Image (cartoon, rainbow, N blue to C red; front, top):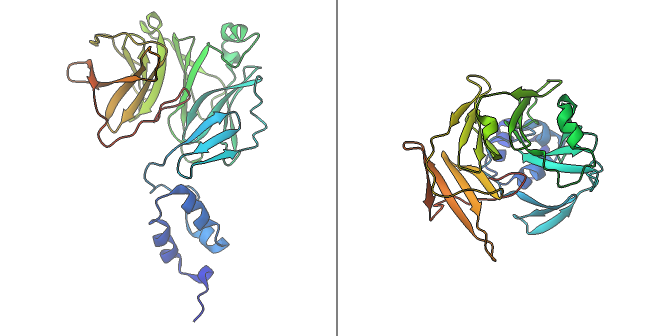
Length: 285
């Protein structure tokens, strides 16, 4: 007997979709027919962590899963006129030469505007003669996926390695987090975890920014025998906060430290256990 796949009951289609573990397979599954596409969520929430695509130029991405390079036509990414200052949940943070900021999804080509940096005239003045290697906007991190329409995401940014600013979905301007002590440190990276943004300085100091409660909690009494440089990255592996430091040598070598919250000390580790780290300027995971 011939089977009419498009007439499978919705509960069976949903059951099959939840057994898929690779995002590309999930997309192919939704493309079989209209009934299958309408029977399952556009954005899957059950998938395990996926191998990332690595951005190797302003329009080329390397897919680790398939070992292939994909060239995407992204007209908003003109080299020399825009810069990329963050990547969260598959979205790129784009800074225009005019100080306008936006989010671009390179796969769906969806775009979302963020407030302009014209909010800070002194910063815009520094952007005069903009280059791709701008040093005033350090990084932008998102709290959640902008693709989820019911989620009010927060964008958090480091400016001039001294100041923290944020905006929530629907804001018309950035808000400066003016907290005593933060501008005494040089901030180099930030990551979001469990409702807070964790920001790291070159001396190993951690600022925890909870935008729904107390704005900033500054851990200044952290013990650390090393000194970080601008080539350091922070990332969470499970519940462990890690710091990855590029060693100054002729070969690509890293030291990795884990924060011991009980004694507030960065401890060097020798193994990642079951985890793999992907380290990059735009984001680490």
